[in-house]
Structures are given as C-alpha cells and as structure tokens.
Image (tube, helix red, strand yellow):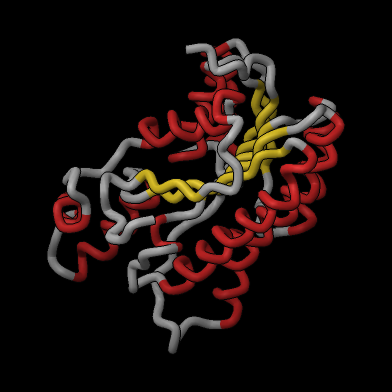
Length: 264
C-alpha cells in the first residue's frame, strides 16, 4: 500500500528510543525526512546516523528537553533553518511517574505538566503556521490508556495524559479549518525501555524479576495476554499520518490489546 508520505517532513519528540524511535523508523521506511528530538545526545546522534544510512532520508538530530520552552524555541529555529517547514508533528516525549498525591511535590507535578501537556501545546502552536504554509499537516499526540483507565501508582502521569487527551480534541476542532488533522493515540502495554525500568522497580517490591512482573501484568490486564512491540504501535501512527486517513479528525484511538474495559 502506498501511504503517500514520500518526502514529507516529520518532527518526533522522544525520537531516539522506544515508541518514538519505532515511529521514526516506520516513517523513514515511507520516505519521510525526520527531525528527531531527544535529551540523550549520544544516542540521538547514533540513531540519526543509522536511520539516514538505512533509509536514505534526511535526519536532523535535535538535542532538547521539551519540558523547557526555550529548548522548544531553539529546536524550532533549527528545524526551520534545515527543512524550511514541517508536515507531521508527533508529540511523543513522556515518561511514567511513581508517587502518591499526598506526598508528591509541586515541582514534580509541574515537570510532568510541562513535559506531557505544555510541550504539545508549544510545539503545536509553533508548527501550525509552518503546516498552513504547506497546505496542511498532521499532529499526533501520544497519550495513554491511563488517560481513561488509570494505573493508581502514577497519579501525575494519569492526570497529565488525560489533559493531553483533551488538548488534542480541542486542537482538532481549531486546526481542521487549516487542513491540519489532529488525533490522539492511547497505547496500552508497549514494551519500551521505560516499562522495563518501571517493572524492575515495582517487581523488586514484590520479589519478582522485571520479566515476571511484565508477564503477570500482561496476563492480568489484556485479553491478548502480552505486551506489544513498539513496531506494532508504530504502524498505526504511520497510517494516521497518511492522507489515506483523511477523515480521521479529533479521534482518540486505543491500541491496547483489549485492555480498555469500557465501550469507547
């Protein structure tokens, strides 16, 4: 199937590992040029070179912490200087949390608010004029099933991802008049480095290995009984970026192996 994405330009935050990297690889396979944003410069440079060599597309590595407004201003200036514009924005940067509401500090709440919500707000606001100048574009927000069905050890993550879900719905209504399609994807259990780190910490509390914890979690929560690979999820991202998904606007899509326990 030709997804009609060749020579598009995509900005992906959290693009050097996990879901972001899998989406980058899938888009590069469709001929999309990439601006990859991440904090770990060594890994970012390594993956950018690998993707460029493997797929023959242009890859711009952008070291930035998108929880910081100044870093976003800098990366957008660098992107525009290198590519002149952008067609696709993947707001993917994020990480899990582990706290109680009673004990979590204001500073921790503010960090996750800036990382999960304000980064998407600032980047969308910055990218939309560039997309309008090119006749339209796509913005995809990577939220979580926890925006609707929380895991109770991470209330800050749940709350800020729920805010991202609502932001996507509101932005979709505003942006579609400019031929910019906004949608939100809510993954379930995706086997990323972040999940392995979480399973290691939580499993130790119960005397379980990370793999034992992950296996129990998957079998307890998902009818499919397993975690997905980032690559499985990335295929869905790429379809929603494509003109073939032209009637998908303001959607909230669950890719969760059947975990969501309500009719959505």
